[in-house]
Length: 223
Image (tube, rainbow, N blue to C red; front, top):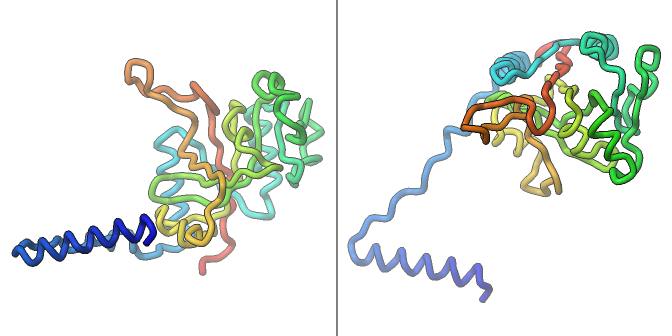
């Protein structure tokens, strides 16, 4: 008998003894609160936008056809000159005209750590989806898009598709089928970096990005 089976067997025996002694075994807790009606893409994105705004995040809506134009406008508005991209990013040559440098995360961090922490002004990353209830972005870091891209630069620009937003974390887990295989590393991001370590006063941008800009690509039509 395995250790797991031994523990379960002991618990079952203990329950049987309690019942024989007249005790009442509590019913299993209900998790029906997680089974909420799916609201559709637009209501979910509106809820996510509201939650992100409450923690000083910025959401900019756009369409697929205007995505490049919207990202360019963000870079110009923020006066970003040194941008960090994944080697697989579709924007590698999109903004060369007004950027001083487009840096690719294409080598070990040990070789350019000082540049990342001192010179890079912003990064653009993809997202795996979003959670409307908490205004959370879900990122799945990879070799070509490591987690430092969203954790270090002062401005993090995240591309989120409206169709990838789920009502709750429970819905997101089911949609991604993480019960069949979880990612080795996932990031849940709710707004810019913040901490309350100093005299229990909430401060933003102390240990990471000072700004979070979510470029939300809207669905052309509701399902």
